[in-house]
Image (cartoon, rainbow, N blue to C red):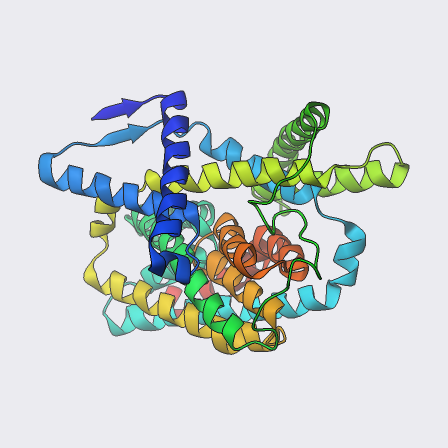
Length: 400
């Protein structure tokens, strides 16, 4: 066992990002299907570590103490960049997308429970391989698996949940690009949005140069720190109440309130270029850490029937994005980018969704609507509606 401390892990994450960039630029198939750079680099490192583990028994232990702060900082930048006036203008699209998302949640659980019953598995295992871990991610999986252990006596619920969520995180980052590329070709705007007709903003073009000063950077870091500090306090106050929310949701909404309040009072205008630069840094490092630290050998703990369920869920997610998400959202370029984002958080997590969309907009041009709608639905509304859907399914007679 080799242990890497905090700084060594940070260095490793940056090297993974550089490796991912080289891979995407140098391997035609990765570039063709717009695989996100952190996914390409992180997955290759995870595979290399799997080979080391299986061949000579070596294992590298990463210090992940920066992983959660980076994720929270990313969500803070999403909140700081959210303009309430823009959200109001996108209300109809947001509502439609939320309906599409709820449809996926219902189908994921139906597929999971149905296939678990056909394969002779506990229906609870099918529910864990449904919206709990795929649309919910590791955090939601951990929370519900604890309930399954305590209330239903499902002893291995936590291990199953973490393995399913890990599987989803990897596949969510891999299928988003190919699905979106296919949809862009068949959309009403197959060439995307030219940069000269749509000015890229915020997270849409992460590689674009942005002029910022050291003072603006310090001010933005201070705003992010406020969001993290206050967001954590709010999450703790809500813990155990009917309004309990994950910490990252609280951080995001503190960012929304802070930036819009300061702008409304005329006291300070958040500098979106600095926010996007720091947000992209946090996003890339978080994904690199999450993927390079995957212990792929632990996925072997998933029995073959569970892998069959998850493979089916992945195929269904791709088909759902093509035949439902894209069509309901307008069959245009924005709808294709939304579909890529939906693949990201429909199987993995919101950061994966943003990375998927960035890979598309970096190549084909901006999509303001997608970057307005997906973070709000994927980071906030998904947790609320997913909890309601899961509770609805637990009322079924098969769960006693």
